Image (tube, rainbow, N blue to C red; front, side, top):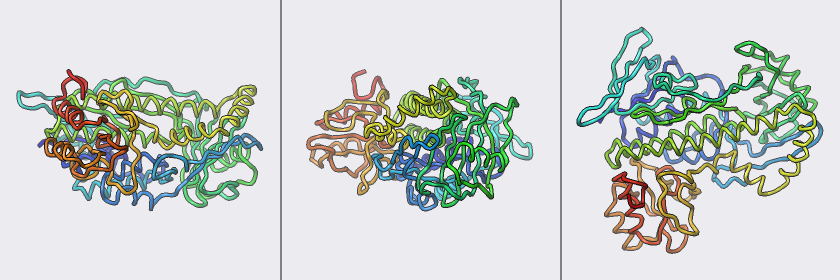
Length: 501
């Protein structure tokens, strides 16, 4: 069995490698950097990502939660006026909070996981080029890898996954366009210690000001991330702020009394909002920042990329293991591109709302924001969007028949604390939520290569719900024969799944 070559060993690449390895797929994981990051960078693991980590063994999400810090609410204010407070406690998840965890720690824990699964990160190795190969019996990828000493290595892989960031060598080699815009403003980022934060350390704050926005994320007690927009500097790369400049922005836009000291990381950046048109290019795939980048508003970039990996890995494993045909992989692009569009649009809206410059528009924003955030449905929608539990695949080509009263095809199935997560274990298997009748037992015998032997309790009486290895509903029916038809269609990969070709 040829390995899958994963280029890039950040959070997305290591998630991809860990998922493939636990499904028994051989992996080569390379990264051009000499070591993993020591910066905090991406700071949040959201609820949906924690749910998906639970499927992967090695304690699931528990090591990440133990190392992180929980933030369970977001405050929004404009001057002395409180606009609203959004609690994340209503998010429909076992993890109704934002887990604040510096990216350096996320990468450390993910590297521990891949090492436990027998995968080593080959560092100071970069992709120089690759070509797709095809013979009468099999296809693959011939990659040329450049080592730190200049040595070139030719490596044969079955598939290639580019998880190598915004400047992706895989994307450039494919010639994939990265369409979008760069916003005409500079942004500052400061990870600092601070005194005088007026809110509980378990709550983040957004301060709308006539000059722009100031965002404060608690990282741990006494340590915070400060983000604010600044006027464009005119240079190609905005200069990093000093501690004095950071304090000046805090004093002008935030409440009185906050005092920053002992900075850990000071940086500046510009916001790009870009996405590729295709996520699959033959035997090559793009995931994470290689496929999409956007405003950091909402802190969802790394999570979206990791969820790209969770989506692709089970499909790739099924194909590599010979359980399903290659057309299964064609669902990755449509599903994750649509999810990427949702995240890009939500991040752009949050950024635009926070950086309004027109005084009249600011007044309207503050008034409408105060009214809307007082409504329970708006609070719920905000919490579900931020935590990413609302992400689903309603237009997926994998969606099969539906049944009233159970999760619709493409909809996330809320994990139950007392049940094994769908997709857990050493093989990519679909899960049945049903009564264990003789007909269901026959279904398990007939299609055991696709189905988990552990049958979960039914969602409602008489319903059989089939759930994908990534925890999304595939189809539902009141007869096992319908479920069998769906799975047999998946094996054949002919026509829309679960319907006649």
